[in-house]
Image (cartoon, rainbow, N blue to C red; front, side):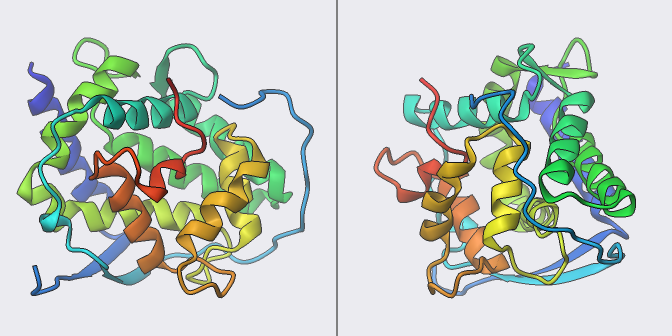
Length: 249
């Protein structure tokens, strides 16, 4: 079974997973490895009720269809290698469901969440695992090369950029927006970095880059622009290259 076909199956799972959980109304423009055993930094107690449905509208600063097709350039592969190693929470060379569970537990630990909120974060992360393309030989895990090589055919598909990309971005945003107020705070972003074993002190750098209106919060539109600039560009001088911390070699 080809990797492209596997990737396409992953796209179908995105639609299935998001249906009934997160509905996104995309607005189209007519123009055009950190330390593993660091101490826990508990910031505050979050005791908010678990969200049910999230309805979001994304106003892209630059329409995803305007980005050139990816070629898999060396610099872009470094970015994919970086994200893979962040998601490989136990550093065994594969991304598995357990890795997503680890990131959820670390995020809940950082924010000292109650059991209900911690379970909600875990459910979100597992849903994210379910939609990514799986290995061609063993669907229970994804190797680094499979992760990197399967990405361009997916990201270059018109159907992904037009229809599924807003859903993926919305799911990622919701996973970071712990209190469900529609905005990402500094502490929520730090918790995200902590969950992925990215040094927390690197959070401020990328947070300030994403916070384009300098109000101290990240909106869904600001997050969407950062996401597309990171994943859909191959420019080595792009300021959003630090979205997941320092790039891997």
